[in-house]
Length: 217
Image (tube, rainbow, N blue to C red; front, side):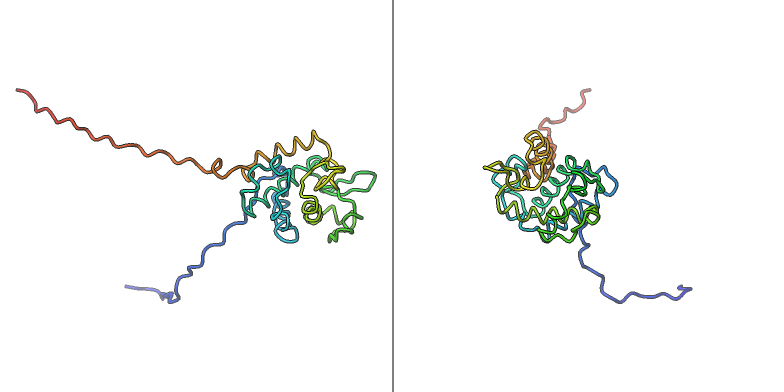
């Protein structure tokens, strides 16, 4: 017996798939407060105005990300963001408000405001470049020009090319080695077969062929 009014749902159930959470790769600044937000901002920038980066296979990419050429756009975006986070260690020690060079360079990736203006970045002043999302967006915009132009991450060919054309740490061989060792070790730079879980072998079922011996009197 129903004692209270009951509302019967007559609509068809919603069968739309649940949206997948956006992929956030491991970054070197993950330990910093706000680090995951920086990663999300950088991934968005590379997916938007710097999408050309994912169509380029730089000539020195094997040093930085061995499986890059075999991966799709999402994993390639992850590499560029991971590389930015590795670069931020040497540029600003992950400090969004860092100012260097006698008030010349600003923010996470130490961008010169005049450089930001020349590349058409939205953040064009020192204060604006202290915003981590804007700084990373500007960095992605710059790399979207220099990396395809030179087909390089950091190569010296009569001059420094690729990302190294604008960022000093990318011209220091010891720092290149340190940064590339970190990016190469990340899952998004590893072959797929090395990051897939290994299936557990099925336990074989042993069937006895022995017949039972009847008890002896």
